[in-house]
Length: 135
Image 1 (cartoon, rainbow, N blue to C red):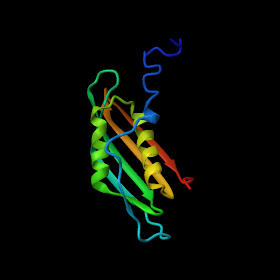
Image 2: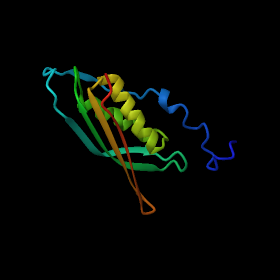
Image 3: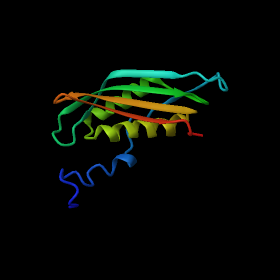
């Protein structure tokens, strides 16, 4: 084990970038192509498992994007997010995984993911992933 890693997590999250989440996010054609509007979805119902304890972690998630050709279909987004409730994942990885999956599926002009973890031990945590260089 690497001397810098005192947690015992080394290598245990390496599969996350390649993991396929089922069900997938579905899309709907954006009929106002060429018009820029910010679409914002948010939920307080996202949960995932703590990779150390196996207990659920609770999150507030905001997804903001400027569509190009496709929109996220909301029912499929809800089912996609629900799939995380059985996955042990660090919140930093969770934010990036959601960002990458949406980017791949929808190809927006701009995308921003904000993930706020519920406070534990009096400490709040937030991860923001944003890019406007998606095309």
